[in-house]
Length: 266
Image 1 (cartoon, rainbow, N blue to C red):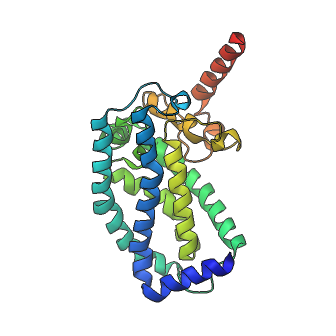
Image 2 (image 1 turned 90 degrees about the vertical axis):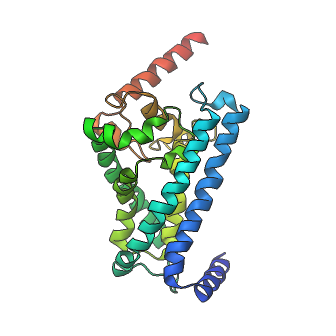
């Protein structure tokens, strides 16, 4: 496996420059993972497949789904791509590299775990700030246009929010100066996580059923369907920040009521 990865990476660094890999390569990888993982949820919603696992009964209209996709493409090409290109010198100065040797899996795993922890901390506070009255009305309300989220709405946001909360995703890598392959793996995992959190479905195989601290779709869907002043559940990946600061009380109360109701019916 290691030799296969090394051979593939050798091919990339031979045919493409560091700048091309870090900017264009990262952008293409992001777009591929994001749309390939997010588009199926539009199909599920339109066709009504697996509807018993859908968290909300309400469906988005075709026009609303198309608006989301169109706006995303605009944001990605006009905001995300230029931002990746502009930040390249900063990441290079902080130690990012694409050359050999490749990092060990222990190093990659440790760095990505660190990225998840610091991203969750920074995202939580940034997200709470966005739910203050002025910032919500001016910026964050764009993301909350979809009270019934689906996978692709994870990145549907005001350009200012993309920059603001995007900082939470890049602060970890900026601090450690990772190998590009570590950065790519982090980006893939982060995209898959946020798409899953916004997918609108809670499956028997959802990670939140197996990882106690993982939020998932059910946790974040609650955040979308309540008024901004009462929603809570501000965390990105894990739930401990909301638990520590008591911003998940409404969600836990609702879960408890539902569980008690289900017990009475059995």
